[in-house]
Length: 326
Image (cartoon, rainbow, N blue to C red):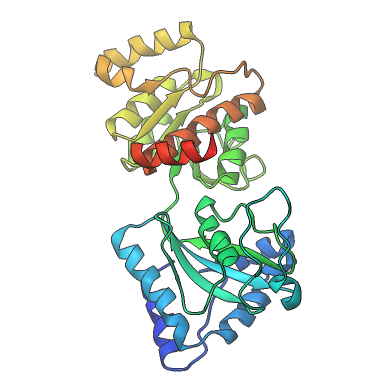
């Protein structure tokens, strides 16, 4: 989403005009999202846009500022399907109580929330609303269907982490699907079009090389992750050298100890330092006995999630979160 889009929406609202909210900017209301939950259709987004007024401009202005500041923040929506049920208190005996009031009203709502749990909304919210508004920080929301008559969705205002898969192996197929599912942007690089097909990688960007010698024509950023998963390990040395040259945040390589020792020798011959080699996670993924491509993908993506968590959150923030959860 573009910052200027948010400010244009705010200006329309302050002028008393109905803004245009597009599913392209708010993909939580895309046709794809609606196929999973009809309540979050493009038509629902149009209904919400028509309900907004000048008092809601502050949400979009705060969102634009969050983008300026590089904040981890979201624009969220309360989507009401049954006004009476939304306002009824349906807390159960297990979950924490949020008073005797359900949602503050039976109307749709747009709001801002960031990872510091700052909430901005132009209309009154009940304690239960606030609980669910803050919940969008678990991306997009974890308890969106805990109560009847409404649901909660959100769109993040920050970039997703990009994961490069060096090699279109069978393990890479499984990693690409799972990494996409948990919110990574995925790009797969290979030199064989038959392996690098849309059927194998429907949710990933695909880049076909003439040879792995062309890797340096593509430049990952220092915030990106690289998973070295080449077919038959044929191009592991070139891929490791490429990732290290670009100083990516994380690089991991699949393979057994014996093979990886050979890759080590080849990489050192090409100028990699021992310190740089030590920065390559090998074997890639968490250790829990994974063997099949699908099992290895779970191990790898679980590690990527953990790396992303540690990259985004301070030690203090992680300790607080882990204390609350565990």
